[in-house]
Image (tube, rainbow, N blue to C red; front, top):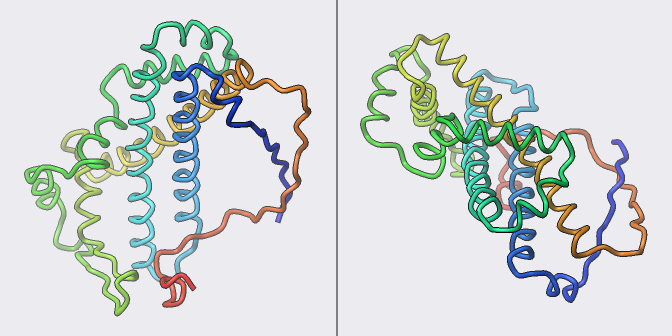
Length: 253
């Protein structure tokens, strides 16, 4: 266990209601997107934190991590679209807030604009795999590219919550890696590592940028003379989220 400090910033509905509609909506949506990104990024860390006792469990939990990663990728793409269409394109808002960002946030924004301004892994995976079902030919190409010696396995259990169709995830993972083009196994593995690196980099830059933007909007409209007192919290070290659970856990007991 360790100790962190949390600072509750209390607002009234009347304060929020007094804000211009478009800025209040932006504040809510940007804060919501930041929450989703934070939760999904933590789940990625937690699903990959264990040391499984069996090799097949390692396979399953690696696939579990990639499922959460794809959800995060989809959310990151949607979050950038939110920023582009609901903030950057609205007259007056960029001029009010962007010049007041710190130099680090300015650098993060410039990096994100470059990244999303060209063909990129995040948008490609979002469009084909995260929030859409891949085309049949994409699945077939990935299936044909995998060898007979791969673990073509469905892990079955009396409890549906402990059943994992690993072979399906193996094909999807190969399809994602192939989306960069035909390549050897080494290059495909390198592409998956690059997907992970891109996802974490984009996630953290968006979170840092949005944190400053939220603070600036609050400073503009919700400034209060009352000091914010911190609350000390005892928090655990990174927990491990396994795939296989006992029956009571699956029933929420």
